[in-house]
Amino acid sequence: MSSASPTRDHVWRALAEIPDPEIPVISIVDLGVIADVRVEGRRVEVDFTPTFMGCPALDTMRAQMEDAIRALDAEPDVRVVLDDSWSTDRITAEGRERLRDAGFAPPTPRTAEGPTLLQLERGLFHCPWCGSTDTRLDNLFGPTPCRSLRYCNACRQPFEQFKTI
Amino acid sequence: MNERVQLLLALADDELILGWRNSEWTGIAPSLEEDVAFSSIAQNEIGHARALYELAARELGTDADALAFDRSLDEYRSAPLVELRRLEWARTIARHWLYETADAIRLESLRASEDAELAGIAAKIDREEVYHRIHAEMWADRLLGSDEGRPRLEEALDELWPYALGVLDEELRPELVRRVEARLGRPMSDVEPVARGTHEAELAELLHEMTMVRRSAPAGARW
Image (cartoon, rainbow over all chains, first blue to last red; front, top):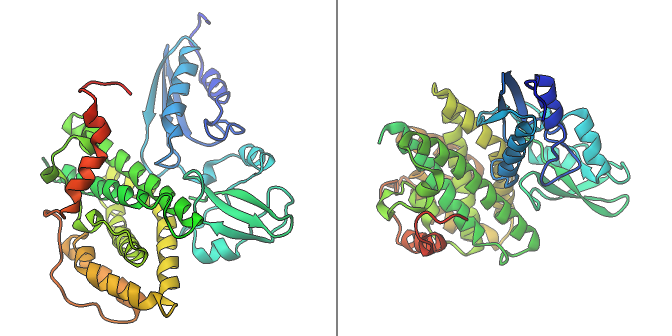
């Protein structure tokens, strides 16, 4: 326990240590769900913008943030912001790299209108295993709300594609 | 109960009840991919319901679970379309496509709302609903393109049409007519909507099953 109050920087670094509960290769900071951190003395406010609304990991993320802030000897106030500010475009470059390394194709950039079937069928999707763009959409949906299922025709491996939202 | 809370509950109830209905396909859909798809759509819809109930609960001084599970049947504000039990593929696709089309119109209207919180949550929900619409349209087109599928889907669409109109407030219905007719390439009949405010008999059965575990434990149980 430190005797001085934590700084914003301390809090950001502590939050960056928290892995996503379902995809632990990426931290919640790289996932882009921390919109803001404010520190006043020993009180730390975090604005948390959830990802997919049916994601069961959201409660765990929140509890882990609170624990991390308490470990800094501060009082957490994690505010869930249910506005439209989180998009898969908020995932950092480093986060994308880590997803790819784990065999998980990172989300493609979002267009103004959002995804279309044509784009999902004809767009450029790289296989996370071999890098080929000769892939096909198998299922818009997958084992969790954030994933679609694709198949790589080049290396004949199925893979999970992070949905663009 | 003010108008805003009533609107939040109508939206949340639609998503919860439809989420439950979609989950009934888990394990028995015509293909494994559709088991995954309908289960995932159900999870999204119930997630939307949770967020909407939380907003309503804040105004009512209760919590989302109490709103989802502890109300009496006549307090639910769901549209009759989502209450119907339709374990037949063409009817399921008909309901799915009609609901997602109506829901898209409703979300567009909410996104333009002056209520910033409501506009924000509608936009967030819509990011996920895009995938439901793509799925519903893909299946509608697939059935419309087959000799066996087309008449079966058309029949189901006609049967559910008054219910689909009933999902929306009166001023939004003409847009639903326009979109459905444009895709089908034929006029829909001018019928009296089966609107919100009445319930289908199947809802009682659904609520009984849905609340069974919660009712089995005394109030205040911690899970």
